[in-house]
Length: 343
Image (cartoon, rainbow, N blue to C red):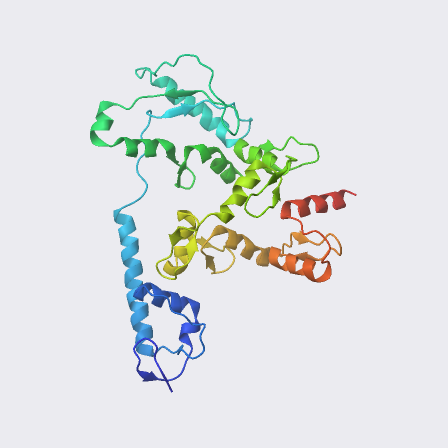
């Protein structure tokens, strides 16, 4: 006989707090971290506490859902009042080409709105890519009387996808639409590279990361990076973690990572497997899980041709059997596999 850790009443010994789902429900209800690593602390929970925690958790979960319905994040997008960018024409066949033509037609109909005229002066180049000409369209007095500029600019920068209804940034619309169509019209122009991307920005980042032979040392740890973009991404590892989880005390770098971590406590699993009833917190874990159904093993050893479905298994294999061989990225492994198949 042991004592229940929650109500301290004597009950039959069990290890219900070892169950992750039940423990996270209890942490969500009590807003406290439950440590199960120490052996001398009881892991028992009585039947009464089990039913009460499940009851209060379901009530809390229902209240959250109703609160989201009362205060939806999506709002109708204001039409005709935005800052329009004039990028180069997208390649034919992509999803952005039809949207681009329709958007231009909508702006041509706004004959009553006069854009501001700018003097022709040399525009300084940005860090990434060539400068783009922008045409400012004013907000009307009616809009400014009912909404703040911050809300109007937020609506201007976001659009709602006609396929899935998600609210995304207008700069990511081309990539998002091409993901629905399953096309990647932007191919890498470097010889020997057969990778393609959904938008031009992803291709530019790929070229800067992969095909730029530079030498940029990190001032903190001395690691040599191949590009300035890789150095900037690597520098995030040395930043001080400012966001703390109130339930378990975990420190993270960004607010987005904290929101993703909170899904573990709230049991919010939006990414469901189409083959089995399992669901996951993030899409990357779902992608790894789908390999168990498809049998895909993309991580192939270049020495003995052993294949694995997860990178951690591939790294363990290389360190154990080939300690002096280089450990490659997935993109490099796919290139080696394609070259071997061609030969």
